[in-house]
Amino acid sequence: MEPLFKPYMPANVLDDLNEILYSGKLAFGKWGNKFESELCTYLGTANAIVVNSYSSAINITLSVLNIHQDDEIIMSPMCCLQSSQPLAAKGIRIIWADIDPTTGTLCPESVKKKITKRTKAIFHNQHLGYVGYIDEINQIGKEFGIFIIDDCVDGMGEVYKGKKVGNCGSDATVMSFHAVRLPNAIEGGAISFKNEEHTLKAKIARDLGIERNLFRNENGEINEKYDVSTVGYGATLNEINSYIAYRQMENFDMLLGKQRRNAEVWVEKILTNNTECIPLKLVPDSEPIFWVFGMLTSKKDEIIKFFRDKGYYASGVHLNNNRYSVFKTMEELPGVSDFYSKFVGIPSGWWLNKIEFAN
Image (cartoon, rainbow, N blue to C red; front, side, top):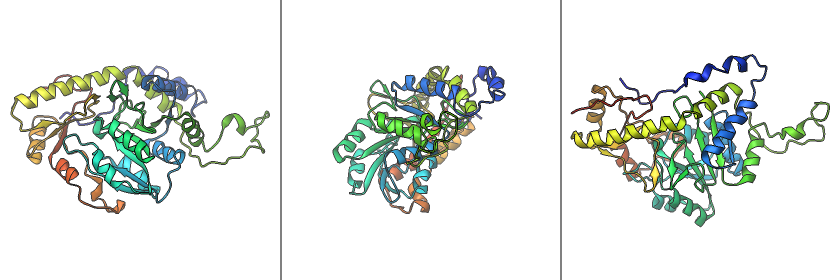
């Protein structure tokens, strides 16, 4: 059966791996800087940094934006636990907003209604590689003076109005390079900021709150006059993971091209084979990466079985997080409930060379 997710690994990944393993230089260095530079070039910004996990990306972003325990963040419950649990672990008060049930992404009107004096940010999930209402959410941030953080856990490579998500005007974008993401570092993450000052703070925060050029004196000893004054994390990306991700960037656009072509085939197939499914609506001027191909149906369980019988692993993917008691807010949201009852994801990944499908 064709899987819903699959780790990618390029054929040339072994070329320099042995040299790195025995170089004596495994911590963030040459390859970490090369990957970070490549990421900045790809996104079209100088303000992206790489870190060792998606959770680290979230934690550092919260620290840099001065978001603390008991502050409120508005977000969609139709997201991965990788997005919501780091916020809960920090003691952030998560306020669930409703979604547009035709796109799976945050509903701007619902977000506005959830804003209070304690709201510090909107965590804008780009659901399963589909772009959300970026302009509308960013405008709400400007109107109310709150931060917008684009949650790109599945969506590196998405495009909105000709720009890569990560360079679309939000205050920060967090990205995952987990094993089943593209690119994957086996494990890793990144943050892209709008503000250069935030970027500089994040570079210090990812390295234990240390400015390396000042931390040691001319003899290589820790400088007694240097003060570590900010909270930091051991969150630099090691050379092995950096190298693997860097090599994947060489084929990144080609892989996304395959996924987008597969999505075009799926649209044709499901509309011409009477599957009783409707493709997810796309936000205007957006180009998803189709981490999965999403569709809506009134016969969810039947359709999941139907596609699995055809050899394509189908799934509802996420359970809406407002059902989990850990988040302490289990309110009913009509758009979320409608979407969850109808959403089915099927494989659209780079590994699908031919989609054979007939009713």
